[in-house]
Image: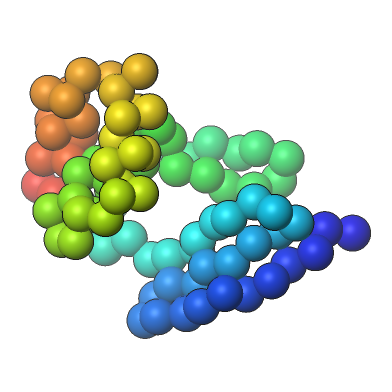
Length: 92
């Protein structure tokens, strides 16, 4: 059985580790722009939606982790595409 360690909470957010993998679960106020991905029974946001969320995170706080995530997302999408995803997600 995987070991879960809760490291913190904030309004609408829980973060922690399962074994040694860090994760966060949170409420995202904008609608998703692509369908949910089902992976081993867990609902996940698409890479395009994660890119939109990361642009939003950089706009709000801009931690080092957010920029690292955008770097890895830039292997799949251009910055222009990521900005377009963010714009599309906030139009609703």
